[in-house]
Image (tube, rainbow, N blue to C red; front, top):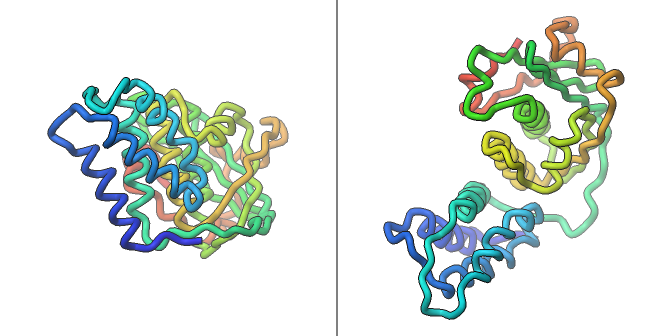
Length: 249
């Protein structure tokens, strides 16, 4: 299944107009219209189902078509997620179950040093820079960034239409991934990029919990690096949003 460029741009314009509207108040008709449109395209963006709940709740607050309400911040946040998703070109979704591939992926993070990714015998690591733990960025954020970087690598390797198992030792990060949201705003920003990237390449991941003692990426996330000849290729291009917080090692 796919969404035509015309329909995608039309829906993107509808979302963008609501986000950037100079008038803070909206009526039931405008919210019902955008809610219905977004609900319709969740067949293309299945993870979007987790980003509709605040809009559904807001819609229930209107007693009739004439009352005006201010758009809640939680709705603006979810609409910003949809805006980012809809900006990606050529959206599609396979009706078939995605084939599973096991690349032996492991991720981990430690506040004392940084982030690590392992795939079979290959590795990559990023050191957390001074000031990384600002604006609510905590260990959960760092663990989410580890997953995000793993997905960036899969994209740069050219993978599409595939499901991957990924080992992680943070249960809260795994739970937030399946819910599609977190109570931590910084974590949510990473989740937004993760779901956007997965949707763009029709990829899926299955995060699997492992104990820290058995996590192959654990020692590397604490600064004990592997052999340089086994550094992951291609080198991962990190998002510019992360430049102030991490650097590749």
